[in-house]
Every structure is written in C-alpha cells, then in structure tokens.
Amino acid sequence: MKRILFVCLGNICRSPAAEGVLLAKARGRGVKVYIESAGTGAWHVGDPPDPRMIKAAATRGYDLAYQRARKVEIADFYEFDYLLAMDLANHTDLMELAPPNRSADIRLFLDFADCQTRETPDPYYGGDGGFERVLDLIELGAAGFLDHLEDESE
Ligand code: 4NP
Image 1 (cartoon, helix red, strand yellow):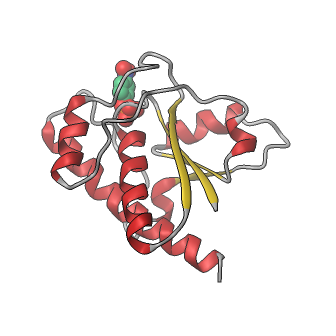
Image 2 (image 1 turned 45 degrees about the vertical axis):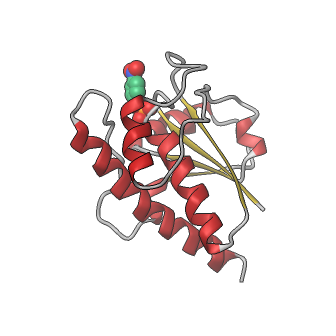
Image 3 (image 1 turned 60 degrees about the horizontal axis):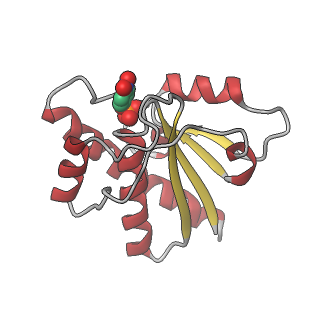
C-alpha cells in the first residue's frame, strides 16, 4: 500500500481537499492507499479545513470535516512514498527541507494530471470560484495519479 502526503502552504484548503478526493476516488477504484496532508506553514496547526473548502467539497460528495492541519515534519520524508506538492512554491520548499537520504518521491501533484496546468492555485484570498477550480484540478490530478499507481503495480 502506497503512503501519500499532500502538501500545500496552510493545510486548510488545497491539500485537505486533495486528501479527501484521492481517498474517495481510490476507494471507488479499489486502490489501497494511506493518505495524509500537511502544510509548509504553521499558522493553522490544529484547525479544521477552511469552511469554504469543506462546503465546496461536500457538495461533490467529499468529506473533509474530520481533518486537522499539521506542519510538514522531517519524518514525513521517510514515512511516505510520495510527497505531492500543490504548487511550485510548495515543491521548492519541500526540496529545501528534504534530507539527502530521504526515501519519499517529491512531485508536483498536477504533473500526474491530464491538463496543461501544473499548479493548484491558492484559493484562500479569492472568491468561491477558486474553490471549484481547486476541486476541478484535484479531480484530474487524482485520476492521473491513480492511473500511475495502477501502472506501477502491474
Ligand atoms: P492552502 O491555502 O495552502 O491551500 O491551505 C492557504 C490557507 C491559509 C494561508 C495560506 C494559504 N494563510 O496564509 O493563512
């Protein structure tokens, strides 16, 4: 079973949504995964996801309400198979934190998606449309990432 950690900045919008969407889609396809999410920043540690993100996700059938924010830890670089960054800044931050002998593969999540966009834009300071856009991109990323895991296990 692959262990996956989604990483964004605050761990209250994008990476919790990615955790919830991938979990639901993996269950739907019968792919066994262990998923968590974390932030590179510590402002929201212990908080549930942003209520706007919880609501937008719930409308599509994804439950995010159980999640609580935490910060990325050095142990994550050894305990997860994949650290999936939501944008390029998250990816750069992870590469800077990464111990040289880490075992995790550090990737940009949308590089697995069938789309031209590489980054999931931060919706925190924008309107409701930003949360729908985040979910659209994450659904594409989740489908592509599950294809990748299935190819890998063949
Ligand atoms: P996220 O969005 O990285 O998708 O969780 C953010 C949420 C909060 C903040 C930044 C980004 N913040 O600066 O508080």
